[in-house]
Length: 89
Image (cartoon, rainbow, N blue to C red):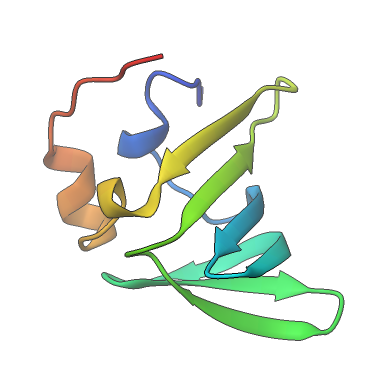
């Protein structure tokens, strides 16, 4: 089960996201993830967002919203699961 505490070590595909980058805001659902980017399906089509330099607000299934700095997400998804990171609220 995905919680705010294990979000960084969990699969992001399928989660709703609101991403804030330099002057732009993108809302949609995560469709794919690579080491440095997230592909988000929006109403206007697919958008590719660079993780570094962006802030992501993920909506979790239990109605919680977690805001994550993109620098914490940089890396291959399989390797990110292995990392241990301290969660601070």
